Image (cartoon, rainbow, N blue to C red):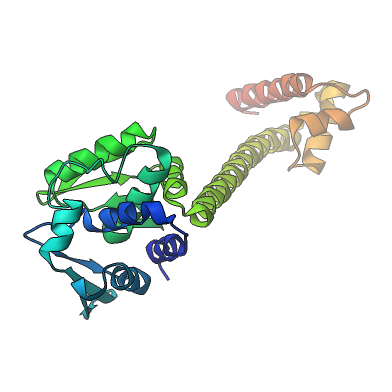
Amino acid sequence: MSLTIDVKNEVCDCAIPQQLADTFRYGLLYCLSDEKNYLLSDSRRVEMSFRELFGSLVYSEPVARKNGQYYKITVSGSTLSEKYNYNKSEINRIFVSGNDIDTGVFLRGVFLSCGTVSIQKAGYHLELSVRDNEKCEQLYNLILEQGMKINRSSRRGVPFLYSKDSENISDFLTFIGAMKNSMEIMNIKIYKEFRSNINRVVNCEAANIGKTVTAATKQIEDIRYIIAHDGYDKLPSELKELASLRMENPDISLNELGKLLEPQISRSGVNHRLERLKRIAEEMRESGK
């Protein structure tokens, strides 16, 4: 089941106060027009809601598509058009005064009739396919009035509203009554961020280990060269001790090497001694020894 259907099923289960029933109906009808007095929905619950709310004024038929079965829901009768004025672009303030409650109920109806939401590898996506430029502008301004953020765009000349921000999407779903799915989106975001942080730490540690191994390999090459060319016995005692420990412990860090010495020394002290061994090996190579 898609996230869009989950959200639509959830908001269909939300109780609507009797005094806001017309506001909800108006939201369902708002994205219809004289030219296209129908909508396609992949939600059986949405189709049932239209039938329950508008009765014989609604005709529905199943439509098979590549990505599943849809319902073509057609609304007929001039009575609805006259009552709700949904053919006019300007939002009817008789039903939507602008407060949080009735605006949320109105936008719930809008989402049921023309909204989609998804979480994909590319990210989050909420869309309201309004299709009418003026209605798109009206909805855009209404959503902004409520303190939420949304964007406008068009696809092949058809306008729509959208958001790709998980927090904005979560705010919108909460506003229309889909609290459960809103929380699910935030939980997914937290999980993704957690995994991303773990991967970042693992990659960083792997890179550090790689650098340590590369450096240790070069250090051991220098020590082996010194030993092979009879230079080990000529080394000062502190360099002999460090050279021996590095050969015995090729995969430990400089900090760990320092703790094995007697007396213990710091990382920078170990690094300084290894640099001395490196210079000795380079001088021996240059002299041909």
